[in-house]
Length: 254
Image (cartoon, rainbow, N blue to C red; front, side):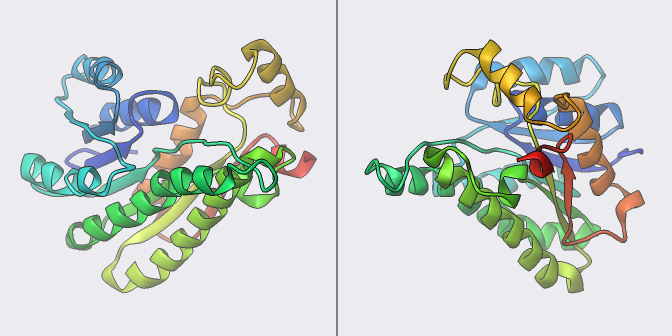
């Protein structure tokens, strides 16, 4: 899959799926805009891309803030002149349940990044994507397909279900402009977001996640990235409004 002469934005590009996907796009010839909050981590990803002979655009921004989010598309267009692919990968978890008194605060925090920022970026990107016949790939989760067994994860699970439907609605609206919109729904992935996230002992979390899959296996960042690149490519030109689940059977087992 060649992305030569294509311009790609990847949010949440400082680590995990986002970092791996940005590097994979660059390897296929794309010019990449890296978007995240942590400057040092973005710099490390940028260095890996520069080693390939590509010069990425680094945009340090907090997507939970509307004013910050509003700068991403204009900066990319000013730097590269166009946009072909928007990968909305940035996401976060904030815990709160119906009974612990924290659910509304957690809900607001999660929705700002996981849903509102996606809608804002897609709206700002749409006119530019229409010019290039581009597309959007949203990174959702297998969490969108089932309720959480842990009550405090309610806000995160709800946000991902909302993101799936944002995708379908956006695909419906933007089809007439020649813009495709799809989601990738990973299950447990062997990365810091899922394991080294401060929510418990990483070794315990990792083993529990492995046990929770049908295949006894955690996907790699690159495996998720491969699905993202497929959906962003011409090979998927007949695919829009779809959810691509890559979870080793996690949603089936739970």
